[in-house]
Length: 358
Image 1 (spheres, rainbow, N blue to C red):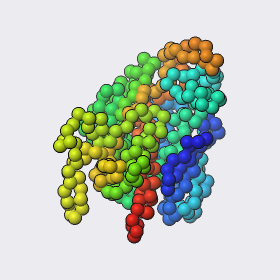
Image 2: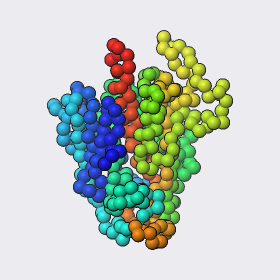
Image 3: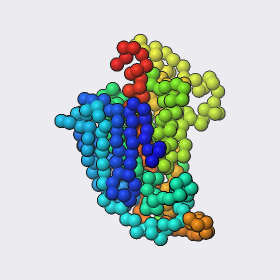
Image 4: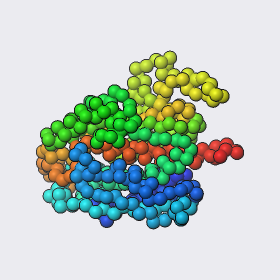
């Protein structure tokens, strides 16, 4: 379907539905000679998968990846890399009673209005299950970027108004909400479980920080680096807003407060501050790229809600099944992957910006 591909030089196309036989992705444009094995992909998929903890969906999927093409003797060949992950624990029975009803907060009505037909089993292509392909492709992009000294770290900055006050990177994978503040993490977990008991859900903010990004990435005018990152993040179903650096707070600041002034360190121009989040004029300025994404509360809740069915009749709905009471913990690796895909694409595009650049 249109809209299932992303990128220019480093291009990915995801495929598959939530309750279909499998999901997967084709990565085209990865340079030859990159050392790559399934374990590199599996590491990131394990961070995204369901059933990780009491604050995620209990659906059990191993998400075991199989690389079908593009790799020979442990190296990329410069040809399309195709990867597949089979769905093993899809339970479509919970969707039979609501097969003709539009779920509030979901893409059901939008898909039906556009195509006149939809996959009611978990939302089909609109399901978060589609992001398996993004994370698999992102794992390749991350490895490509790591070879250039670029490091991507995501974390849950806020859930339901509880915000991290410190950033301790080593703590992120030590708690089930992936928060860099251990004290805030505990309160986040308590809030998520409380909302689950109340048959409700909560949203939050996920932040991605990228160090080692060289100055000069980004394509003016319409393919600005921040614009493409924003598009990548907004293409994730649960994301409702994106900001860089000071973000919306910049609207309350003066130019003298927000401008990132420069100095020279070891012969290199560097920003003194980072109010812009590492991107100015759509091009990276050498500072850490800092981007935050607003994550909406999980739409599938067991509370009674008003809706309509496919023939326009008023209905009520209580959504049963296995759903995350908060999506933030699993959004973290997905958001990291989308940022990685954009940076890998722009890194390759940037090689053509000047004669002799490599």
